[in-house]
Length: 468
Image (cartoon, helix red, strand yellow):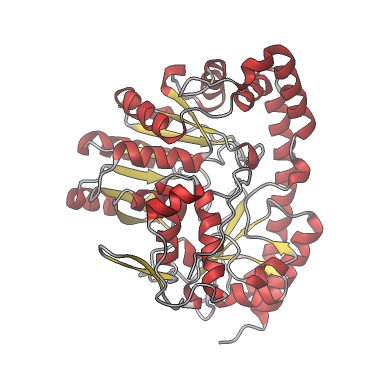
């Protein structure tokens, strides 16, 4: 039989590998692809879809970890009968999800608060100013004036000292992680991550043949004692962390933990990868410390994404790269996509230089602070059901620990039947983790006040009537 028709949208804010994963998954669920059907070879499908091999590898690995396919060494990937209790929820987890009227699962901003008018003005000004040059190839590392303005921004707002030459513009955090993986990892290398963590990162590391070693989090950040034990055993190339409003736990690292991490990196000779997409969204005290701001050893690779702060569809972020890795990262970027959109780079540069970024960020923070405080007040109703959580005071999510008798995955399914979409912890933990079914993540980013109130009411109703 012929393989199913696949349509990928390069303009979507959903990564291509997740689009491919979703479409193959639906074909398996609808039995267009029967059990034991052999999927196309990675290179063949990549060539047909005009994407790189990593996109197909990531999609196939996601299908495998979700139980939709199995891999046979030397033969390929074959459709298996999926275990529905283990379906990945990175995107729409089953057909009912499309009917959910309230979405607490997405941390992407609502399109209604995108700065479309002000960014359009920057686009038009760039077109008038630069004419056809706006559509020419940029330097591999990105438009130099944008890199210069980002240096100023990092120093002023994040106390990070760097140079334009150390900055590499990328198409969002996911491409940044992919470039790091290609530049630093070989098959068999070890990467230590927090647990729970963002599985888009672990998938990228695994696509290079790396082995993932999870380390628990404490209230102050990654467990330093457990981390050093793992380091001594596996000698990692990278340690991947999210130090500000960690996804999914919303945890912020203490300065003491940050400094200890840097000392470990220096002592054991590995790089720290600091993924930052939320540090601007602090609603209480201004959070100033990051690993990179304290990095006197030049051992931190810093990733900054604008997806949650500006407009996801722009697909733009950047890396701050240690000096001795610059040439290698540049070559990797050239092999990945040669150059990104000059028009977007030039427009974002103007967006910063005309203070539109600061205006937009203040506007976003005011909106998100209101949503945060409303959801926080509504969550108080759940404490009588032994639901616990830490107030994050920033970011876009809450991380709720459920009472012992409640399964996060079953709660997700029950809420979905009521029109509410939440994220169970099963997608953030390794399969063997003892607490993987004990938490849920709720995001207020795409919701208005009415949806927040109604969504928490649905959640309370389901928890109140919960039974196995």
